Image (tube, rainbow, N blue to C red; front, side):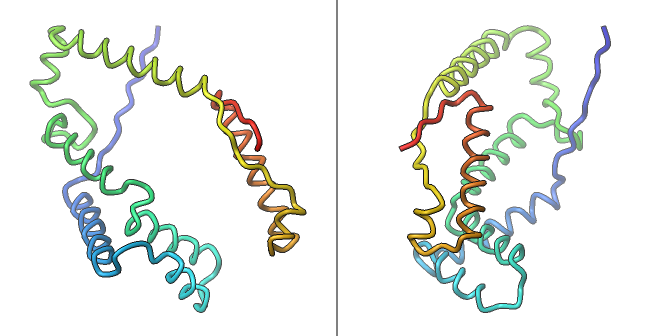
Length: 176
């Protein structure tokens, strides 16, 4: 049997500081505007010379960072908790703290690991067994609501790919 070991690099202290600077800059905007300003940002971006991908990037960045659509604050908090509690500070790759490694190797955390593993498997099974209701549009409806024919075709392609991805993940899809 061949065993392959993969080392994952983690962000260093300076990279992590930049993420925190980004997070705090987003918080300052959130406090200033008191809520979602995505529509205003989108409107402002529509008047720029940026191409579509650049505009989309800036709008998504605003939504994730300022509107907290992606849970960026929770992600940063979880990452910091991981680094402080579990990460070996002397290793620039993902690695357990030496004292945690010892506890794991001595089998003292085996019950905790087994419980967590079983809980994760159960949750995965629950997620895979569910069926989600997805509102399905046809191109006529999209054009009727003001979209162009090209937009409607793109939307339908996207909708079909989304449904395929859910099905591939084992999640049932029913249209409504």
